[in-house]
Image: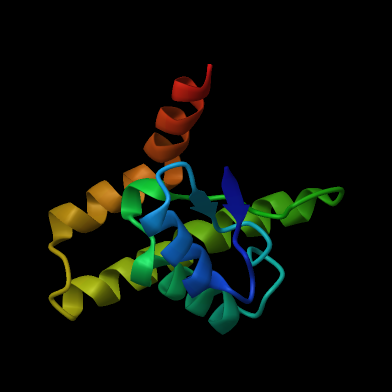
Length: 117
C-alpha cells in the first residue's frame, strides 16, 4: 500500500511506513500545490520517520501541463535542499544523500512495482 503524502499527517505516514512492511509513502498531494516552504517542510517531515527505501517522489500534477513541470522542478529542487541540509547537519554523508535521492526519485518505485508483478 502506498500512502499519498498523507498531508498534513506526514509524520504519521512515516511512522506507519516504518512499522508496517507493506506501507510506502510518496510526496504526492504536497507537490506542487503547497507553498515552497510548505513543500520543503512536507519532504522534511516525511524524511524524519519514513525509511528512505520506502519513500517515493510523486506529484499531484494533472490536467494542466505546467503542473507536471512544476511538480518535477519543485520535487527535485526541494528534495535536494532538504538532503543538503541533512548533510550540513551531519545527519548523512554526501554519498548517502545521493543514494537517498536516487532511491526516492527512481529506484524505490522500481523496486516496489517490480515486486508487485
